[in-house]
Amino acid sequence: MKKRTKLAVAVSAVCMVPITQAIAGIDVNAGDWKIDFSGNVNAFYVATQCDHGINEPGSTTAVTGGLACTGDHSAAVRNGLLPAALVFSATTRQADLDIDVTIGFYPGINSSAAAGVNGAGQPTALSTPGIDARQAYFTFGDVSWGTVKMGRDIGLFGKDAILDDMTLLGVGTSSSTAAPGNTSLGRIGIGYIYTDWQPQITYTTSTYGGFSGSVGVFQPLSSGIYSSHNSPQIQVGGSYVWGDPKGSAAKCVPTSSLKDCVRIRPLWTRMNPAASTAAGLMAA
Image (tube, rainbow, N blue to C red; front, side, top):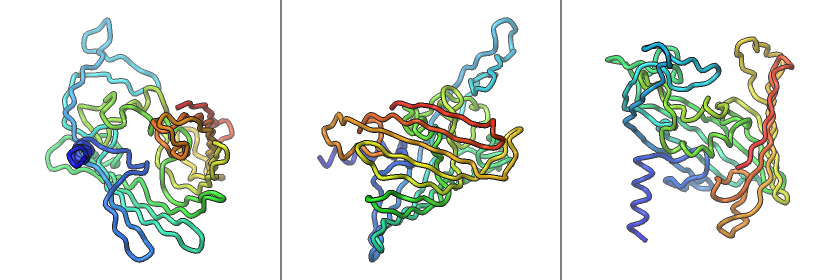
């Protein structure tokens, strides 16, 4: 048992763990508070051979609306789909409320261009990586009525697509190997839309007979013709979970991973103008 435990820790350190889900870290008790430190460091050697087109040597194959690998062959030492991470979380039970405060920093090993930490990479001398402060939020609630989240965290729309992506612990399809940034993007843009980490106020219900739901108001974002900020972005998600291959129905909760239960989650988001709506149905 002791040998297996050490092996599991080593694999997690060399690869990575999905920080957005509950994981074991280093716990410190301070009075009524429990403080948890968790994270990961990862690095991969990646070599890509991209499509140059069919008829003209040296030409690239255009992929409208996607992030498929095109252009020259390239190699890199880079992060995978997840950057490295250092996450601090403090939890307590006060005044009949479960309270959680979380701050997460996600640095990369590759240098970032001046455009931003999540922009294109800058593989030049004397450059430096950036730190992506993805998470800064607190929650309060109770199992009897649900949970309210306020701050910056992962969005509702499309969240499960990336959290259940089998390439989450690896590299996936890498489209920017010549100038790697903080993340390889995995299969983002090649099968699903990225949810993003967004300022939000979100309410999530408790689970009733397998059903639960979430609704949140989010900071409106500018993108192309969608530039109006006169009302918040709204995202709504619902889920129904059933079954448990391991025989414990208690593990089937909305934040469970794919191994714990079967989940169907309809999702909806709306931005301004009114024509900017999207909906989807996800089974996991």
